[in-house]
Image (tube, rainbow, N blue to C red):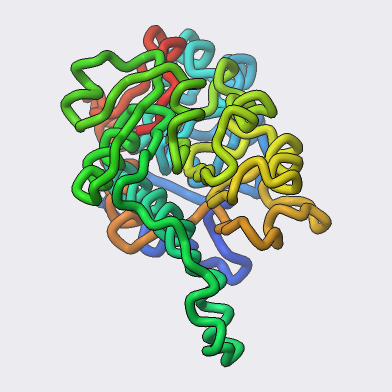
Length: 337
């Protein structure tokens, strides 16, 4: 380990008053391990060579991108640690060629994100927003007008059978549902181990009452849910997305909702984020929107912070981190976690 192994922490995880939106990040553990650290200046979209130059490692709390050219122009950089599971915007093979390891925190994200997907699914199944609004407005006479489809006997289709998708399959299975899964990188044994049936994506769309996206965003999965796939869904079915906003063509989704081609949607992620002020999706009566934070429970933030900080210490002390991304395997991957 270098005598002055220096870590930069991106500013996008902090509020205007200087407090962390994630609570205690455990940065004192870096100090205890003999590392120095400081907060980076505010950066938009991409980490640049001038920002990266002083650091051996960067803890990225948001979704900042990193290109191979930027890594090559910052020869001191050895490690980019992502706080979370996603790595879209990071050229993992390119930066690896420049000697930079990229880590994420998939295990820490897995259960909280699956529970977030289940939360949206159940809220749609029981029409929670409408029932809450009726009660809040004192419209007790409207009891029974907002009867959701429920869950038992329904089919849940999971798009992306990685860690989060498998966790979700195991969570919903006791609810008396049939579970389908679509993922070109998964095999039948993996699906069967969590009680899911592996099927093509178009069949999943046609047969599912709830289509849940847990996939990672890659060039091949961008706008995976387009007008054609939405047309294949049932008019009584719902779309839930906890993966990335770019998985869905939101113009096509707006049209499908307006035409009544699907019953509604639960979205923790959008494209772009935040949405435009005039975007009709957040206020659509059949849509539940949360600000890409539904899984941010106390156990989530604690576990993710611990995983990210441990990865930084491992790399600094010459150990291979547990969750180093394998550049050679990423082109096969279309699932989260």
